[in-house]
Image (cartoon, rainbow, N blue to C red; front, side, top):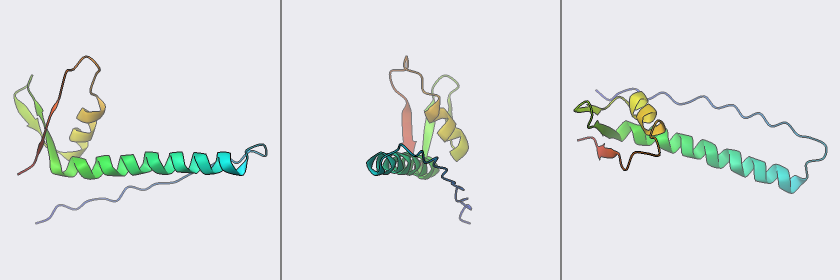
Length: 86
């Protein structure tokens, strides 16, 4: 049975100021689209990978926990093992 994947609900709110130029608004929209694209890619990626937690000798497999583990990577960690699920 294939797991059900929830589509994220995304709402964009843009506050248009009178002094924003058209190019500034377009740049802001590109930035938002890029950020949302990255979030969607991360969510899809978390469905097919798992993280090896070497301190606890276990694999993190649930997509929500994989996303959290990848977001919580600290700068002092040299590397994190990310493996494709088999």
